[in-house]
Image (cartoon, rainbow over all chains, first blue to last red; front, side, top):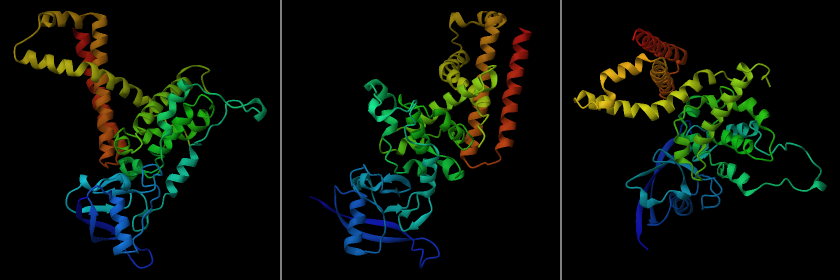
Length: 247
Length: 113
């Protein structure tokens, strides 16, 4: 195995002692095939135990280790050192308040996630004795892609609209709304439209598409939002232009 | 929170986007060829003039021009917004008025043929 000395420039912030964030440089001896998260773990283990960051699975499943690597939102467990030259700049996810070092506060996203009701609201409630709500593979395929979100918030860090208008519900939450709207067992679309079809919902999106580029789970939030713009527009026509169509 | 009325401007924008994707590259290519003196026989001035003189032809030309203008105006408005120009009402007014003026002009020219 080949070794390589990597220069990491990490944004540090301690709310107890610092008035503002600053960069700290670390020189880390790494294995060539390591990812940025491995390098951070090495810093924490051998160089500076005060460094804070979130991670859990180390296999791009849990969505905890999102950070800005050379200015791009990435899962640090999925950012291979071999793809970077020179100093690697590591910062907390953009557009979220910093809690400490690379740890950000996800409260805004969590609150927005709740607002879109990301769970099945059954069309008709039935007692457990009547069995499960069945679904065919074809019905599953309609929304499967949009159910792969790991809530890593990279799309929020990439979205210029979220950065400029923090009220925007944002890519991941809206995509999950779409995922449940498309579910054959679900009847909650009308309730979700109260959030989705507002200015702060899909209409704040200008289809930049950065969300889909950075998504590590290939969810393609931009396509979900475009599809919701079409259905919301049809709703609008039905509600405003067709007599008796007001829902 | 009230539902947005954005579909009023978004639907023609989406329609215009589709029109642009299908027609504009071809029109650009044909215009370029025409500028170099290569006009396909089927697209000669007389035939195009006759096409624009026909009622359905007028409607098609107007549809392509008006929807493309609207779509471009809306796209520019979004681009201004993306770049942080937050005077959205001003940008929208200027760009939409330009698109509407262009559409009216194309209608006037078409009706004169």
